[in-house]
Length: 319
Image (cartoon, rainbow, N blue to C red; front, side, top):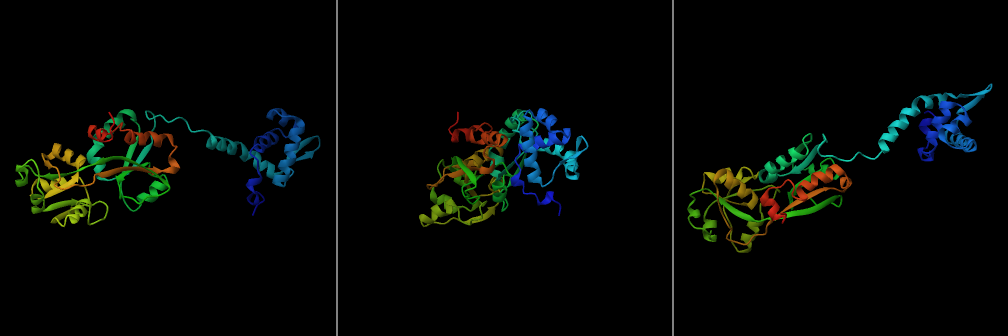
């Protein structure tokens, strides 16, 4: 093992390195002092410190001049580029500009996001960050570790989509009430209101994204001693309107999804015949990247509603 590989870097004062570079370049204490804008005695003192830390004389007399030791010669060749790299590493990051950035932002979410605000988001994002990109990852077992590590910039999820973590910031964006979807000309659509009897008389489609067989609807029904008949469970919000469009099945789903489905598929909507807690839409991200300027800008698109639909902005109470 070489001497340098045994060196305890905690002994190195970064202030010594520019002086070392000047000494190795000039091979003269007086000239190095002038180059570093210090006194000759101060440079002599610095040389003594460097010799002690590196356990090497560095400069040795040869006639009327000083010459480099083998170690000093190696340092002389490597130090300038090393100092340049160190300066680049320690330099403040340039100000973030969404208009010029080429960054790819990573978003972890459910397809709820894609249905509800993807169109509005892309219009805003492309207008304000034309050279940037977005990579959307579906919520999975890897999502928590990816968020904590700062590999993902943000997650937009439901209340129970991911475990809570002290390493993550967490904000509730808004609450989305439930509505009941049914096909046009459904027998239950003949009335403006949906009775509990009719609600329970028809089969149900359920979107299950958090791995639980019983959701808020089933727990509310159980509290009233009732149970619905579930004929289909889906892992995606996007396919739920398709499942009810051509059948008599009902689907109780977040109203933002249902309103979008009504626009696309002429689905009928009704208020549920029982009181249900609204679904929470959560934004969460790593505390490690909380101060990252690019990440703050990306989060603001959702936290401040810049890239959200009118319906979502209304639920966030943003004008």
